[in-house]
Length: 149
Image (cartoon, rainbow, N blue to C red; front, side):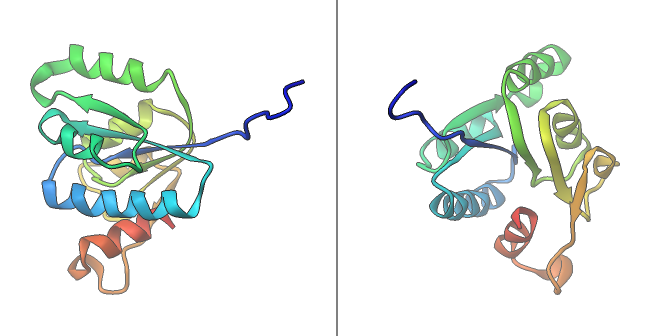
């Protein structure tokens, strides 16, 4: 028996591949979550052009790069990499068909997405988080926080 056995980590996958402003807001949410949970390991799926920004965030432990122009072959390769980890939670913070498909392919106990998801993405979630009281007029940070509660 190891005298200093590591406590198990809570694995979280955030799916927010694009939209620079929304990614920045999402990184603030990730930083807040990490500050509250020392046992949290955060992974993130992001497009190649935004990957350096996500990698620079100390709260994010692993970055998966989504090559939007890579076609089905690159998508399947990405999802194979993602499926190597069993996540406790997946948060689809984008709410589009492609991110819904990513959510469906990830191994996770809980798959969470936005109640206002479009393009049928909502069918891939176990739980849908309602928008804040101001709905779509809410600031992206408020929507991001609501998605993670």
